[in-house]
Length: 432
Image (cartoon, rainbow, N blue to C red; front, side, top):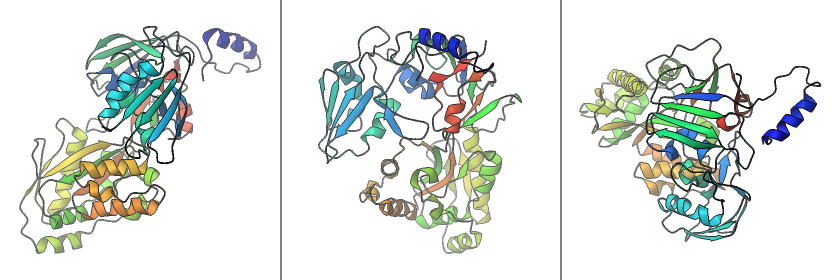
């Protein structure tokens, strides 16, 4: 937790001599962030949104749920009723106090989209969330930026306030002096959107055909893998999809296309989340694939990949090359409507059961996740095995988030040492 400015200055003067010249945090300066994505709303602005809008709880660097705007919570045994105690002495950027009543509108609107039966009761600094059914993954949902608390799309409680906003182009933030955890080190943050430049203090490094030229002094921050690239069948014989799964060689995709920064995905969930992903690992089996194809009349497949996505295009071309060896014709196309779709599904939860249920629903097979019991890990494996055995989806690769960090940026190393699940920009400070 950062100290208020006056307290930090006093403490730093006392400790300056014993530290023998060690680098101390400094207040001031502007952080420039260059991001390849382009958002049209602040609340959806990826890693930037938490600087402006906060959630009741958040995921820390170790992928654990910790308090944020809520200081404590309790639930009943059925997980239908949840009570949250809210942090006192918190203010929105327009000076209005944060309390239970002010949290309800944005929180209710967000939760209604997923839980139609939710009812929220506000009283002072306490919120009670009531559901008609058990909601075991509620904390994970409340840590999502989707459930951030705000008074308007640009007024939150975070360490920075919005001073200028050009949707899809540029976002300018200034330090919020009345932030409940103490003023941030930085004076301001400038975020340029939809750029491919590697000249900012912090910039994302997307997986693409274009190789950014990085300075030798650039530090690299990488999260655990948190995005799945997979193939989904819309109208393909299960046997043909099985053969396609058998022939795909993921090693070149990981080692060449992803420059060894990704992980081969044989299961839907990554190993760090499920703990059993290694059980799905297998090597390409061209012989078996050819045997399956020899018994079928296989029409050419069209593989739709996201338009303007160079990495997805490269993966699609690699899949087509592998498929040809088994006698399957695959035609990659950026146009929608293919018999096979390449999807990019970011993980939205650190709870394996919740994430698997979400994927099952997206695949149109929610019933395959009905038997999930978080207390019995074997039910997760069985459900994921059932989804894969339906031959409707082929996991290809799991990708991390990767950022370049300029030499003048400090305090990003904490997340790196603790497992690096989240890059918290609120604690960063910069050299002049």
